[in-house]
Length: 211
Image 1 (spheres, rainbow, N blue to C red):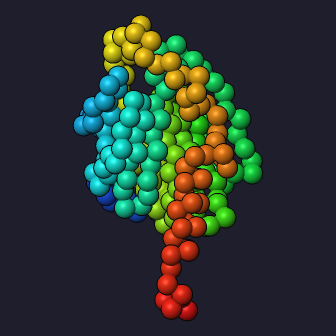
Image 2: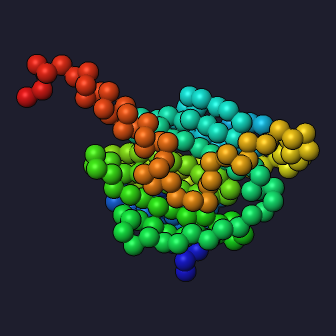
């Protein structure tokens, strides 16, 4: 019965027949069980599907900055943990707006959503050995979550390339690498950047335009 519900939800989402805003986060997480879109973005060691309306603003080894009309997404891909098949447990947090472990077959992760002081929502989702962080307004929350799911579940790793990078000692940054298994909360570089941007924006506003 659950499988039928998942199929119906995925058909409606793909056809645009359902208002995403009306869905709950638990329902959107079910979309992880559906088939991923074919990759259209290719990087050293991995590839992924970039949803329509999104673009890559910056790309470095296993890190991407992706933008859309609803926000800026920070993608971190942990090739070392993938290669070593490291597993980790996430402890659900009752004080968060939404907090849940993710387990789909052999793939695992977590979703944590927190309400920030500026009335925005911080989405932090880890799945398939990669993590995405994004800060969005309430009206874009579910659509942004669906975007993160589409990206993360579509990631495919290139084992031979990753092995070659490790053999050539090109991933020594691992000790200082972003830890996808830990929630970043207020220590997130993303939140710091967002707060800096907001502060600068407020300082540059013309007082005559504020009523």
